[in-house]
Image (tube, rainbow, N blue to C red; front, side):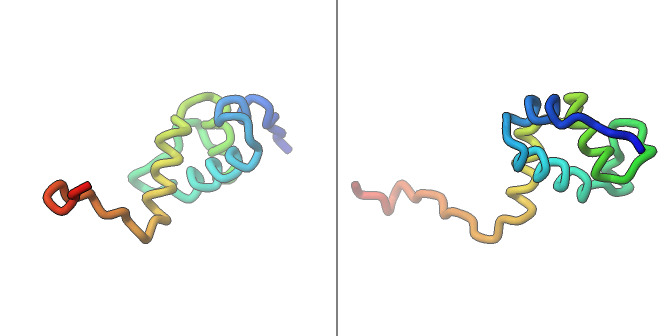
Length: 86
């Protein structure tokens, strides 16, 4: 069984194991016909996503924004300069 060290992935993602797992899970769920893995994938999706993060092939910021957009249900209203009288 292949093993992957999380130390490098944690450094790439920003220093948190939780963020690493959330980023890998979000990336693994996003695989589809249009969104193919960036590394050769002989393992399951989660391992492939961890390998992509470890190799630095995906940007943590882009992945975080993708996850926010996917799960966001309330959007902030844009400030109306005409109604803002402060």
